[in-house]
Each structure stands twice: as C-alpha cells, then as structure tokens.
Image (cartoon, rainbow, N blue to C red; front, side, top):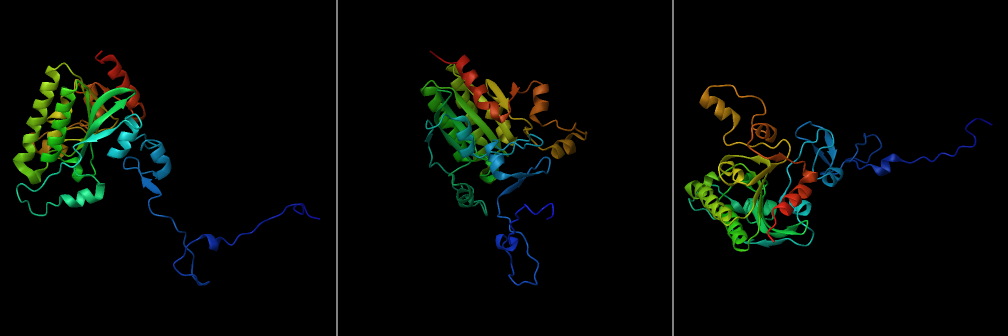
Length: 289
C-alpha cells in the first residue's frame, strides 16, 4: 500500500475542451480564446477581463485609467433607472458642402445613433435635469450642424422648463467636413447657454476624454461648475501644433484635467464611480423650490 493508495484521480482528455484547426493526432493543438473577452488598457498596457472591466465602470484596476465610455453606459451610470426620455432622436446631418467621402451612414451603423450626441430628460438622485451626452465613437464625437442643433434645443428646453442642464463632453472638435456650418454651432450653443444663465439656471459640464478643439472653445468651458474625470485630455490644439507655433517646449501633461485643476480652469476632478453622487449633491444645493 503506497501513500497515495487512498486517493482517487480523474483524468480528462483536455483536447476535447480545446478547439483546433486540425483534429489529426499528429498536429499540435492550440487553445481557442473567444474574441472580445479581453481588453488592453491603453494607459498601462495590462490585459483586462472585459466583464470585470464593465462591472468596474470601465476603469482599469491596475492604473485606474478611465477608459472611454459610450452613451448607453453613461446613461446607465448617471441617470436614475427608468427616468431617461430621449428628445430630438432623429436629427442628423447631411452633406452641406458635398464633401467627398463624407459618409455619415457608416458611423450611424457603427453606433446605432443618428448623431454624435444624445439629449434628453431624466433624474439624478431624484432631481430632474436635462442632459446631453457626446459619443466619441461617432466620428470622434465631432460637432456638425446636427450636434449643435440638438445641444441648443436641449439648452432651450431646459431654460423653458426651468431645469439644470448637464453636458458630458467627448469630442475631437468641430467637424471639418461641414466647415463654417460646424463652426457656427460654437456661437449658437454659447448664446443658448447665456440665455440659460440669465434665467438663473444651473449648467454643469463634465469633461471626459478627450475634450478638444471647438468643443473646448465653446460650451465645454462655460459651465457654472466644471467637473472632469481623472486623466482627461482637455485642450484646443494638439501639443505638437502648439509647440511648432510658439517654438517652445511644453510641460508634460499640460493638457490633462489634473493640470487644469492645478491652474484653476476646472472645479473638481471626480472619479467615475463618484460622479452620480457628486452631481446629485450639487443639484441638491442648487435646487429651485
């Protein structure tokens, strides 16, 4: 009797649990890993299990980098369940300048959205608000006539109904394929916000990665209270363009939300998991009885 005589062992043919390109016995078996199970963190390079990443609000567990979040995930994170009502869903851009290869349908099919922003009404911790959420996955969140019109209408509706408005920015800037028509949206949205402010109503911006170009130069930086997620890229022109223009070396990280907070451009950096609570407290302090 040996020391292992009381043990029972079960053996499995592991090849039955592995998908192979060739089933013959003389070929080497290769493990099958389904596509989409893993995500590589763009900041630290670590491989993350997608399901765990989604449960953690798309925040890397290793370096705490905030990965980009789409509109649907943002609504689920921020808005009270069952309270969101989208407005102006079907507004979309055409091609006013007949720009070559300007294919909006491609981005509509990719995202399931008509434009790069979703607007609507909802509650945050039972406080009614108007909200606009930009989708970077739709042509880099760029602002065309459609995005400008939807944001302006949301602001004007918030003013008419005496509601606070919150805009989550995520954009590469004005859409070059629409030229001056796109640039006009900067003035249009800013004018609507001025009227909202004159009515004594609250405007909160939440800067998410990235917030650049004409978005930064208009409504992104006009909030009564400006919040940002950690590590967010915020700027107008890119670092290389600025350095080539002014012929000077710029400090590392000068276009991050942390740099902007240090220099007084924004009010607070809020980790994604704390955003709803933080906004809810702000709304409570500014509610109109």
